Length: 183
Image (cartoon, rainbow, N blue to C red):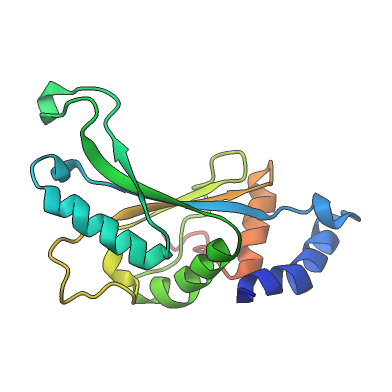
Protein backbone atom coordinates (compact mmCIF):
# COMPACT_ATOMS: atom_id res chain seq x y z
CA UNK A 1 0.00 0.00 0.00
CA UNK A 2 1.19 3.54 -0.72
CA UNK A 3 2.75 5.29 2.26
CA UNK A 4 0.58 8.41 2.03
CA UNK A 5 -2.62 6.38 1.56
CA UNK A 6 -1.82 4.47 4.73
CA UNK A 7 -1.04 7.73 6.53
CA UNK A 8 -4.34 9.20 5.30
CA UNK A 9 -6.38 6.25 6.55
CA UNK A 10 -4.60 5.84 9.90
CA UNK A 11 -3.76 9.42 10.95
CA UNK A 12 -5.10 12.18 8.73
CA UNK A 13 -8.78 11.14 8.79
CA UNK A 14 -8.94 11.23 12.59
CA UNK A 15 -7.03 14.54 12.73
CA UNK A 16 -9.32 16.11 10.12
CA UNK A 17 -12.43 14.87 11.94
CA UNK A 18 -11.22 16.63 15.08
CA UNK A 19 -10.03 19.80 13.30
CA UNK A 20 -13.15 20.21 11.15
CA UNK A 21 -15.60 19.08 13.84
CA UNK A 22 -17.09 16.25 11.82
CA UNK A 23 -18.13 12.90 13.27
CA UNK A 24 -18.33 10.92 10.04
CA UNK A 25 -15.07 9.82 8.41
CA UNK A 26 -16.69 10.09 4.97
CA UNK A 27 -17.41 13.78 5.54
CA UNK A 28 -13.74 14.78 5.66
CA UNK A 29 -12.06 15.85 2.40
CA UNK A 30 -9.91 13.42 0.45
CA UNK A 31 -7.84 13.40 -2.72
CA UNK A 32 -9.78 12.31 -5.80
CA UNK A 33 -7.22 12.59 -8.60
CA UNK A 34 -4.07 14.32 -9.77
CA UNK A 35 -3.92 15.57 -13.34
CA UNK A 36 -0.54 16.28 -14.99
CA UNK A 37 -0.48 18.28 -18.20
CA UNK A 38 2.32 19.32 -20.56
CA UNK A 39 1.43 21.90 -23.18
CA UNK A 40 3.86 21.72 -26.08
CA UNK A 41 3.27 24.57 -28.48
CA UNK A 42 6.63 23.97 -30.14
CA UNK A 43 5.61 20.39 -30.95
CA UNK A 44 3.83 21.80 -34.02
CA UNK A 45 7.21 22.29 -35.74
CA UNK A 46 9.19 19.55 -33.97
CA UNK A 47 7.55 16.15 -33.42
CA UNK A 48 10.52 14.97 -31.32
CA UNK A 49 9.53 17.38 -28.54
CA UNK A 50 6.17 15.66 -28.17
CA UNK A 51 7.70 12.18 -28.25
CA UNK A 52 10.22 13.11 -25.55
CA UNK A 53 7.55 14.75 -23.38
CA UNK A 54 5.35 11.65 -23.63
CA UNK A 55 8.31 9.45 -22.68
CA UNK A 56 9.20 11.65 -19.68
CA UNK A 57 5.62 11.85 -18.44
CA UNK A 58 5.28 8.07 -18.68
CA UNK A 59 8.45 7.64 -16.60
CA UNK A 60 7.33 10.22 -14.02
CA UNK A 61 3.81 8.85 -13.55
CA UNK A 62 4.14 5.17 -14.41
CA UNK A 63 1.20 5.50 -16.78
CA UNK A 64 0.94 6.10 -20.53
CA UNK A 65 -0.03 9.74 -21.30
CA UNK A 66 -2.90 10.73 -23.51
CA UNK A 67 -1.90 13.02 -26.38
CA UNK A 68 -3.99 16.20 -26.51
CA UNK A 69 -5.00 17.85 -29.77
CA UNK A 70 -5.83 21.42 -30.74
CA UNK A 71 -9.54 22.20 -30.60
CA UNK A 72 -9.36 25.21 -32.88
CA UNK A 73 -7.18 26.48 -35.70
CA UNK A 74 -5.11 29.58 -34.90
CA UNK A 75 -3.32 31.09 -37.89
CA UNK A 76 -1.00 33.25 -35.76
CA UNK A 77 0.46 30.12 -34.15
CA UNK A 78 0.45 28.07 -37.39
CA UNK A 79 -1.90 25.70 -35.63
CA UNK A 80 -4.63 23.66 -37.26
CA UNK A 81 -7.49 21.85 -35.59
CA UNK A 82 -6.53 18.32 -34.59
CA UNK A 83 -2.76 18.87 -34.39
CA UNK A 84 -1.01 17.18 -31.48
CA UNK A 85 0.07 19.88 -29.01
CA UNK A 86 0.51 18.23 -25.62
CA UNK A 87 -0.04 15.29 -23.32
CA UNK A 88 -1.78 14.62 -20.03
CA UNK A 89 -2.18 11.92 -17.41
CA UNK A 90 -4.87 11.46 -14.77
CA UNK A 91 -3.73 9.55 -11.69
CA UNK A 92 -6.14 7.96 -9.24
CA UNK A 93 -5.88 5.55 -6.32
CA UNK A 94 -2.56 4.01 -5.40
CA UNK A 95 -0.61 5.64 -8.25
CA UNK A 96 -1.95 9.06 -7.22
CA UNK A 97 -0.69 8.69 -3.64
CA UNK A 98 2.67 7.32 -4.80
CA UNK A 99 3.12 10.29 -7.16
CA UNK A 100 2.13 12.77 -4.44
CA UNK A 101 4.66 11.19 -2.09
CA UNK A 102 7.44 11.44 -4.71
CA UNK A 103 6.44 15.02 -5.52
CA UNK A 104 6.60 16.16 -1.89
CA UNK A 105 9.64 14.19 -0.72
CA UNK A 106 11.86 13.96 -3.82
CA UNK A 107 10.95 16.48 -6.52
CA UNK A 108 10.11 19.68 -4.63
CA UNK A 109 13.32 19.72 -2.54
CA UNK A 110 15.25 19.66 -5.86
CA UNK A 111 13.60 22.88 -7.11
CA UNK A 112 16.05 25.76 -6.95
CA UNK A 113 15.14 28.65 -4.60
CA UNK A 114 11.93 26.91 -3.53
CA UNK A 115 10.13 28.65 -0.66
CA UNK A 116 6.80 26.85 -0.84
CA UNK A 117 3.70 27.20 -2.98
CA UNK A 118 1.27 30.07 -2.74
CA UNK A 119 -1.76 29.24 -0.60
CA UNK A 120 -3.84 31.46 -2.92
CA UNK A 121 -3.77 29.11 -5.94
CA UNK A 122 -6.98 27.29 -5.02
CA UNK A 123 -9.87 27.53 -7.47
CA UNK A 124 -12.67 28.15 -4.95
CA UNK A 125 -13.86 24.52 -4.99
CA UNK A 126 -10.99 22.90 -3.08
CA UNK A 127 -8.73 22.12 -6.06
CA UNK A 128 -5.13 23.29 -6.27
CA UNK A 129 -3.05 23.86 -9.41
CA UNK A 130 0.70 24.35 -9.49
CA UNK A 131 3.29 24.58 -12.20
CA UNK A 132 6.82 23.27 -12.40
CA UNK A 133 9.22 24.97 -14.80
CA UNK A 134 11.06 21.78 -15.74
CA UNK A 135 10.52 18.05 -15.63
CA UNK A 136 14.13 17.47 -14.52
CA UNK A 137 13.21 17.88 -10.82
CA UNK A 138 11.89 14.32 -10.87
CA UNK A 139 14.73 11.86 -10.25
CA UNK A 140 13.20 9.36 -12.70
CA UNK A 141 14.02 11.64 -15.66
CA UNK A 142 17.56 11.15 -16.93
CA UNK A 143 18.92 14.68 -17.39
CA UNK A 144 21.80 13.48 -19.59
CA UNK A 145 19.51 12.06 -22.28
CA UNK A 146 16.92 14.85 -22.20
CA UNK A 147 17.22 17.25 -25.11
CA UNK A 148 14.35 19.59 -24.24
CA UNK A 149 13.42 21.14 -20.92
CA UNK A 150 9.67 21.26 -20.55
CA UNK A 151 7.42 22.52 -17.77
CA UNK A 152 4.28 20.84 -16.53
CA UNK A 153 1.08 21.71 -14.70
CA UNK A 154 -0.17 19.61 -11.81
CA UNK A 155 -3.76 19.84 -10.55
CA UNK A 156 -4.70 18.27 -7.22
CA UNK A 157 -8.45 17.55 -7.08
CA UNK A 158 -10.14 17.01 -3.71
CA UNK A 159 -13.69 16.29 -2.54
CA UNK A 160 -13.71 19.49 -0.48
CA UNK A 161 -16.00 22.38 -1.41
CA UNK A 162 -13.94 24.98 0.44
CA UNK A 163 -10.37 26.07 -0.07
CA UNK A 164 -9.64 26.08 3.67
CA UNK A 165 -10.58 22.42 4.14
CA UNK A 166 -8.54 21.40 1.09
CA UNK A 167 -5.55 23.42 2.32
CA UNK A 168 -5.78 21.70 5.70
CA UNK A 169 -5.84 18.29 3.97
CA UNK A 170 -2.78 19.12 1.88
CA UNK A 171 -0.90 20.45 4.90
CA UNK A 172 -1.57 17.13 6.69
CA UNK A 173 0.02 15.34 3.72
CA UNK A 174 3.07 17.59 4.13
CA UNK A 175 2.45 19.85 1.15
CA UNK A 176 4.79 22.86 1.42
CA UNK A 177 2.84 26.13 1.44
CA UNK A 178 4.72 29.40 1.78
CA UNK A 179 4.21 31.50 4.86
CA UNK A 180 2.46 34.87 4.47
CA UNK A 181 4.94 37.60 3.64
CA UNK A 182 7.68 35.31 2.27
CA UNK A 183 6.66 35.54 -1.38
